[in-house]
Length: 208
Image (cartoon, rainbow, N blue to C red; front, side, top):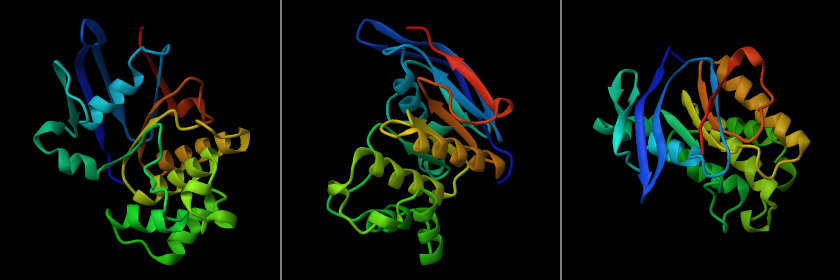
């Protein structure tokens, strides 16, 4: 992946009378993971949704490689993968079918690559079961496999270790490390540090 830059400039967001985001400002570059921390209600999820263009701030802007993302949201969305609290999976498709559909909407993916992603997250034993029969942790692993298959420079993750055991949390750290190693970048809202090398990690704390 070539060098990319995400720049957030002086974001302000209100929810009713509440000033949720107060002049948030940062730059994220390739090979770096920015952990967004803060108490419940500090605005971590709101910040991610603003960056993705899902909600609009009252002030400020988001720049991707120097251009305001609002001028071409479609192109920006093509460069990022967003994983929120609920994995973007269809309950009545299998794990394998979900990945074929989800990733197939973005790019061509061959059977060996798909199998490799399922194996990477430990999903092979149950990948042909309907998603509605899987545990929350298993669904999270399927979503992580899809995220890796997207092959995009920017990952935006909201509590990526939710519902995962210790092994699954280590997996998240390893996948993030691989994303950074191939020249990508990660923006993650977290309650605890991710399992990645300190030199690759930066932190942004939001005040409640």
